[in-house]
Length: 132
Image (spheres, helix red, strand yellow):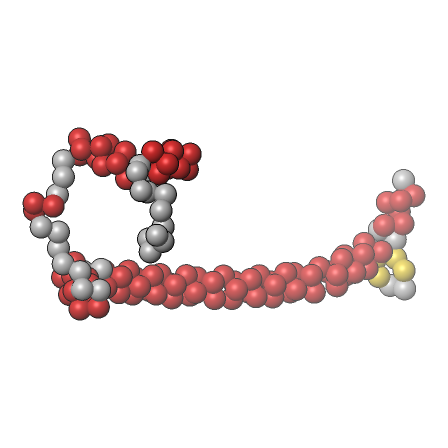
């Protein structure tokens, strides 16, 4: 019971409870102010990042539109004809998908031993051009 008597007792005309409450208020007031100020700074950071997101999305849309304009088939065809001298493939040069395997086998590199054996078997193949 002495704690309650001390708590509600008076020191120089003030109750100890009032002095303790005043000290707690003196600590909490700056703490709340600093918390709110920090939250305001955080809010400013969030607003800045949101603005960057909006600007970046605008840049993305602009770049997508630019890519769409640059990749137009008519433009690519004219550039390839102008700079690379390329023309569209004629219809008679197209092949069926079934013949792709035959073309791949014909174009496949041959092993070096096979090339040497064929060169040795061919008459006159071992001679170098210009040598007699």
